[in-house]
Image 1 (cartoon, rainbow, N blue to C red):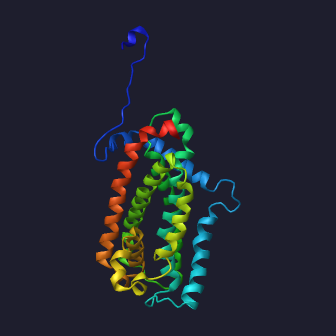
Image 2 (cartoon, rainbow, N blue to C red; image 1 turned 45 degrees about the vertical axis):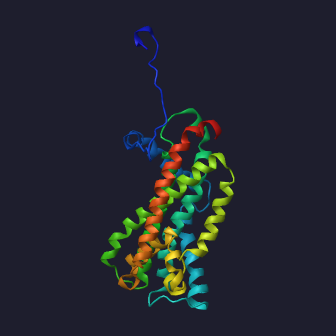
Image 3 (tube, rainbow, N blue to C red; image 1 turned 135 degrees about the vertical axis):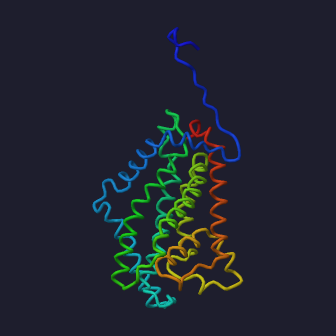
Length: 281
């Protein structure tokens, strides 16, 4: 249509197709919106809370103390000479990033119903921004971890430089599962009840407070590593505590492979269903 006649040009938006069909150029054009949404999620996370960001410090520290008393002192779980406090905190850091951001990202599309139904933008930005906002808490937890390492006399090792890599892998796994659940939650609102149940159950089957290699029978070890968080927690402990905690590499590769499959299939499902979000959200 000609703009000379006072009529605005018509733009037709069609869903992309293909194996994954992620338009990275389009995502980059909306980077300012991504930053705004991530900052909004950071502000809303502790809005109208009395302690505010202090919860980021209190939650892992209190959990670490409880685990140290229950599992380190009473149950006497092996720690291979490492301070049990550091062993536990190194497992809590990736787990809390995963659990906290997964719960929020799974509900992110429903919570953003108004903006989805009125304005076009890549919908993938919404769950991605929620997961990305978790980096602020993770950075604070990393600072606490370094302080605890100094207090308990744990040497600062070169492997610590790999911690950002494992944190980024935690982001990818969380984003992958979050993409699945956020898309499913638009159509099936049962998801908001399923996700808290999964995170509670996952806490007990993930090696957050123990060294799984000592407790899981050998014939079950490779199957146990189907949990993608096993590799991430193993990687964190290896970076913090050194060569004595080198991951079980076959299981490590399997965990990362499962995470990659979740990422690819999650993106595929999200992109194939997002064209219906505005209609049913």
